[in-house]
Image 1 (spheres, rainbow, N blue to C red):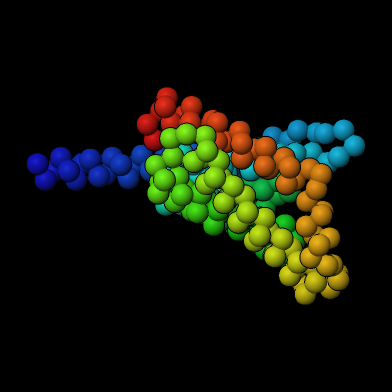
Image 2 (image 1 turned 90 degrees about the horizontal axis):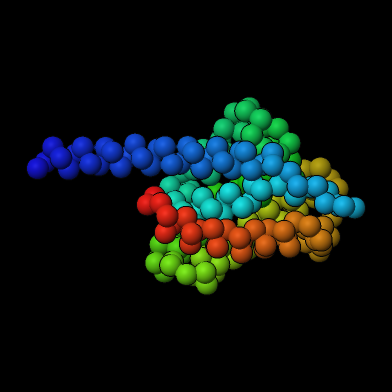
Length: 190
């Protein structure tokens, strides 16, 4: 009996490692799936995969998966939308990557705590993650622009700079992730 319990726990650990690595890879791939929009920049699917990671893997595995993704980029692998390397820490947009990690935990935690099984529960958890990502991202960007780069930038400009593409697109991705999470959870036991 004891041996079968140990074997089952080891199997779960291997499964978790595979899932965390696979979802980290999906986030990296999502950074390079770019959807061009007329008269605007491009939109990537990275955020969608971040939300799916959190909703499907839960708090701990979501946090691990996104940490693997960010650390992989920081050690130099070009997995971020604009490359990789330790100097990414000094880019104004790095805060969004930090936000991904925190949001994965919070979103996953809310999905677990509320036993998410319908659109509204997934969406509300995703909305909390959305707010966390943008709060950390805006704050980091403000700090880097104003105190590191010396470019005086009011906070409201950073906020409005996320329109018309980033925030509305990510809000839509939160809705899509909520729909996809329901369907994937019904089809596959993660």
